[in-house]
Image 1 (cartoon, rainbow, N blue to C red):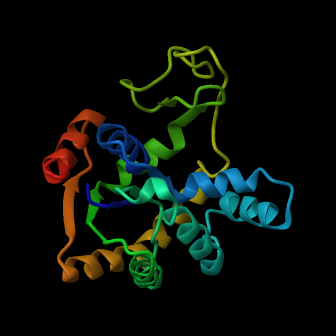
Image 2 (cartoon, helix red, strand yellow; image 1 turned 180 degrees about the horizontal axis):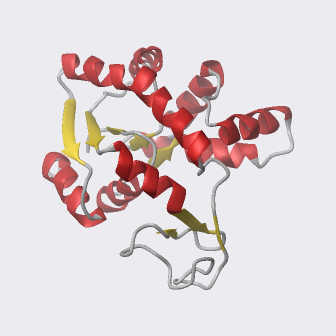
Length: 219
C-alpha cells in the first residue's frame, strides 16, 4: 500500500476520508490537526501556544510541525503505508515533507486533492458538532447528518460541542490561508506526477468510492 496524502480546504472532509482509507487498508491515519489538538490540552508552554494558534485559525510554527511529523512517520506502524492529512499546508512544507520522507526511506505515494465549493465548506464548518464521548461528527446544517437533538449525540447520548475554531472568523482566515499558501503545493505535486483530483461533493460513501477507484489497486 502506498502512502497517501489528502489536500483539501477546511471542512472538505479529508479527516473522514482519511479514517475510511485507514480502516479499509489497515494503515495509520496521521492527522496533524488531531495531534496538535491533543497537545493543546496540555498545560505546557507548547500546549498553550498551540491552543491559542488553533483558536485564531492560524498555523503552528514550521519547526514544531516538522518535528512532530518526522517523529510520527518514523514509527514502525507507518512502514507499510499511511494516510496523512493537515500537512503540508504550503510549498515550503511540501518540499520539507518530501525531504523527511526521503530521510526515513519512504515514498511520496499518492497526493489526492479534494475539490469542493467554498459555500458548501462554510455551511459544513459552521454547523459541525462533535460528540465529546464517542467522537461522532454531526452537522446541523445538513439534514442527512443532523442529530435528532441539536446538542445530543444520536449514537451514545453524549453532549455535542462546537470546536473553538469552527466559527466564521476562523473559517475565513483558514480558507484564505489555504488559497494563498496551500494551493501552490497542488502544482508542486502535479509537476512531480503524483497528484490526483477527486470531486469532494456528494455523500461520504460517494467521495470514498472515487478515492478507492484511484488507490484500490494498491495492496
